[in-house]
Length: 258
Image (cartoon, rainbow, N blue to C red; front, side):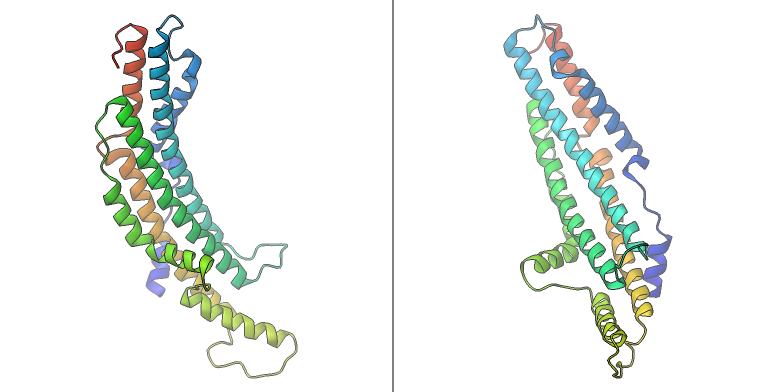
């Protein structure tokens, strides 16, 4: 466990804004918003053409928005990692077990949210590409296979904790037991705490470092998925924007063909 903890401590998580292709996406999305639906097409353009191109623009915008949302969840995974790393929370009565258990459950929920946003990215990109007559994306199976393999434990534990018995990481289970016994002792009840459960702080440190390592390895996969969607798949977000610009230009020049 010590090696795992050390690896987690060495890993420095990047924000989505540190990824150049994500920044390019944000600029492209901003450019699309700046066009505005009313100014996309010249006012003297045929109404049917104007409607068709604006419908394409809406689908293109949604496909870009879905990737931005995916980047937002990636950032939230990073924030939850930082929350997992910080204690105490000054001015509160949050216990060590509450700190780890609740922030870890938050991380598990974000793993599920990330998986669902990947699906949203693909479905919205597929609709946009069909509308813009671009090559259809086909990356969903490969990316979901990677995500489900890496996130399966977190997502499964999350589901069981919501719909059935609460599932704890074994390190949290030990910490919870040690914390419970320590709380009884602090109430003034005299009894002998079992060997190995006397030191709450030790179990807290072990559990925190192990959960940080698990979180770090998951965040690496999330980052790889985000970069793959932005840079390495058959249809890049910038392709969607450039194709839309071509269609807008064609509509304004009377050359648009449905």
